[in-house]
Image (tube, rainbow, N blue to C red):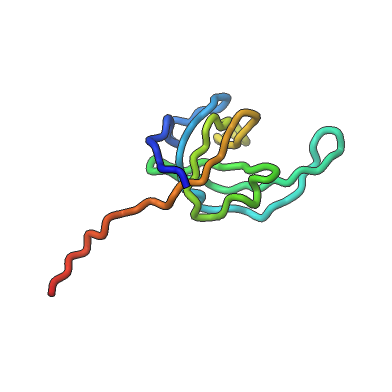
Length: 115
């Protein structure tokens, strides 16, 4: 898995109708469902929540992405698209975005051995 780099954007910075690059943890995912798209075809979609140190945002995954990501995964989204959905920002890969899984955060063990 790739190393983490400082994100270009944080959740609190996200605004609708803009591209964003950020890292976060997938904290929840709803079941996969099928939706009708223009032309009568069906496409798989899954919604969830992405969290970083500054907040959370709704996340929408489409197509192959729906099975690739699991709750608890750390991900980097590059050039993701932020849109307004029912008055709240929502993040997806859009047409240009790229999703990368990251290694889990490694926190140093700060416990002291009192022996």
